[in-house]
Length: 114
Length: 114
Image (tube, rainbow over all chains, first blue to last red):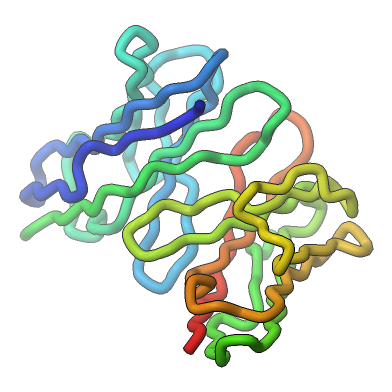
């Protein structure tokens, strides 16, 4: 069965420091991977995706993510965190098969302190 | 593009009542999805439309739930005989056909069943 795991419920970083939010996945076939961010009282916003190609993908707001097939991981990264990055982050996967639904992890709360 | 809109944003109902939610996708997005999100969890897929055809339904979509997209534009999600366990955020998402895999989410409808 397809699944996504976000092993950390919360990540705390200081402003200006690099951040990493972890995600691992389990799918049959080639994965299509996504990161979304959710701010309070707002819908999920798309950040970036990996479909094929370079393992390092760049997205909105300075975020990037590294696809690692051998480790089945797709960690979200940012070189220098901002207080405004504090939010709930979701990793999601879709296998390139007939189904088109996204399977989401439980989410990781990122807290950036000033 | 204007974003995905959902109405109402909040709904409080008594157990046993019927409720209906509406989703207006981004124009020209012919694929539409419904998800449910409970506290501390990521969104869970409910159902998917391509144009007016409902192509996928999750096992989460019990027979008390029905969704329509009659003209391939807006969609409605109806819950009959609501139960307290139906309390959740109901999210709608849309995406273009072909080659664009990310889904764009609306702000959600928060349902509280008392």
